[in-house]
Every structure is written in C-alpha cells, then in structure tokens.
Length: 106
Length: 338
Image (cartoon, rainbow over all chains, first blue to last red; front, side, top):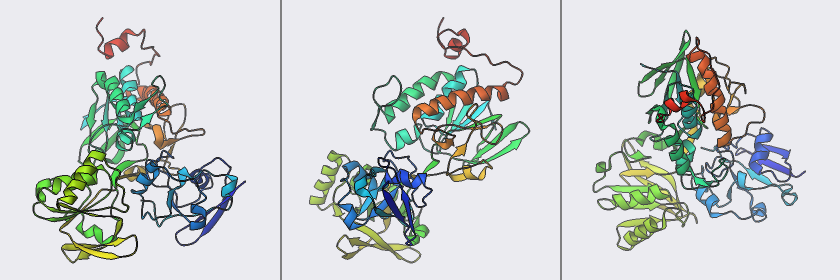
C-alpha cells in the first residue's frame, strides 16, 4: 500500500499507508492526521484540505483543473506548490509522497 | 418569545426538507440561519454547479434545488429568521429556549440542528494587524458603499465579488485590485469591463501579488504587497476590501453540551436524537456508522427526526403514518382544494 507522509508546518512527520484510489485528504481523515480539515467533504468547495507539495513530487501528480486553482485562491497562504489534497488520488506512483500542511486551514 | 413545535437551525437543503416533513405531520416550526438567504452550502458554495444525485432529478444546480425545496415547503408557512445565529440554548422543563445573536428568543420541545459544517463566516485577512482595522478600514463585505468617496481602496480577491466591487467603487474612488495570480475567476464580461477600466486608468491591477503587511498606527495608512518574484511594493490605502469567500465554523453549537466527534454530532439512527433529549441533528452535521454526507441522506434523516419530534410536541396524541397520496389530513395541510 502506498505510504504518504504528512508534515506539519513545524516539521512533525506522520507517515501512514493509504489505499490506492483514496484521496490524500481521505487518507489524512482516516488516520486522524492533524492539519487537514476538509470541511466540505471533498466537493472542492472549501479549500480547507490545502497542502504544499514538494517540487519533485509536484510534477508527478496529475495536473490540476481550473476549478481547483480557483478554489486555492480561497486557501490560507496559497503558494505555487499548493494543491487541494482531496484532488490528489493515491496511486502506486505516489508511494512516498510528502505533503506539508499550512499553519492553519482557515 | 416565539413558541412552536420545532426549531430548525440551518436553512440548507436538509433543514428545508425538514420543514416539509414536520408540516406533513401537522407540526409547526421556525427556521433560523446565519446567512441572508436559504440554501446553505448549496446556494453559498455551488449555486451554479450541477448536482447529479438527487433522486428523480437527473441534474439541477444548487440554486434550483433550493428553490424547489422552498416551493415544496411553502404550504407550511414556516417563518424564516435569517442573518442570525443561535448563540445560546437552555432547558426549561420539557422545552428548549434558544437565543440568537440578534436577541430573538424561541421556545419549543424540539430543536433540529441541520447546521451542515457550521455557520458561514467571511474568511479574514491572515495578518494579525488586520484585526484592529476590521470594521473601520478593513471590510469583508460592503454594507454602505457611500462610505467610499474619493478614497484609496485596495481590493483583494479574484472572484466576482472582488471584480464587481472594483468596478462599482472605481466610479468615485482610486481602486487597486490585487490578486495572487494573473487569472481571475469572475465572470468574463465583468473581467472585460475591469480590464477596460484599467486601460482608462480608472483601476490599477496588481497581479501576481500577495499582502505582506499593513501600515499605520491608529489609522491604517497603507499596505505592502509582494510580487511572486519577491519584489515589494507599497500602496497607500484608506480602505481594504477583502473577498476570499466564506469559511464554515461550528461556532456556538460546540458549547451546548452535545457530544461532538470531529466537528460532527453523533446521533441515534432511529430518531436522529443527540445525547440531549429533544435535540436532533440531521444532514452533514450528524454522524453515525455508515453516514454519507449526501443531500438525500439529509432528507431521510429529517423525515425520521420529524416523526420523533411529534411525540414531544403532541404527547397526548398518537402519531399515525400516512401517505401523501391518500391522506385527507395531509392534503388539508398542503392547502389542496378538494
């Protein structure tokens, strides 16, 4: 099962196994990973599952649609490497993925 | 004090259908919501996005769904109390007494919390120093546009609110529109108008920039913004308008002595009652094994909660299950002509 590492803004790492096909957001919720709120439940309507993806991983993730970029406008401190974790679907290709959560989500 | 059979907190789709379900079985209700209109997340987050999983409606937008539910609930003439949030809830014998932030009081044996993910509040500027100017020089919505005459206004955001206000206020003010990326997501025709105003020198557009600091002492005098490439720029500002949408906060609900699990309220799936007798939770805010956050689940939950309300509202009467197709009682409640 792919391993996903969630890193908090103050560099605490939490590596969990997330089944292929779930989103990085769902992986966080199922494993009680802190720092991801996901208020809207994955309908891309709230920007509270916002994460930063390191450069080497960013290009390996499927590109984002306009709607995700639009929603990221609402996120807390969005950067160039921002993504909504509800839109990153875990696959074997993403085994080892590291995402960093922002200082807070709202 | 308004007395009724059930008070519904939250006028989203689940709350609206609960009005219908209470009405069908002859119970009266009042409905309270923090937003200025009914519809909840449907109307606030995705009014134009199609929904494909409402039974018998292959496709509809959040707005269409809301309008349909309002129409369906209309015969029951429930009172809507909008723009207010329930702050306090306390028990007096068999009744629950609710108080809103506008000071309105309600009393009922039943309270149905259909609060979604909580109440909507504007997303605020993240800089700490913003706080002391909020309400005087920093606004998240425009209540009185006459405040702005010949002022320097910095507007943040990339959506319709930011574009619309940039256009409107540029008629009588110096407007700078600042956005974190070069693409705006507002309506194309509005954006064209804004670009036209930029050409005419009526609006200054700054992209891709982010707010880095707010300057001033007792009175805010300006802001500093940072370009994606790191370049800093100062802009004199009398006012900041910031349009970063809404966030959902559980708010006072967390203080009512209800069991809360990850921002949701555990319920018994027979009645959708919480750990407090007479307080029910339905829709996205409730949780139980197998819970799905679907609108259709909220409808089912409301139907069962309404039946449970009957016993507390009319303890001396016997509830009888009836179909809407055949029941004369229901037809009368719906105001149908014989």
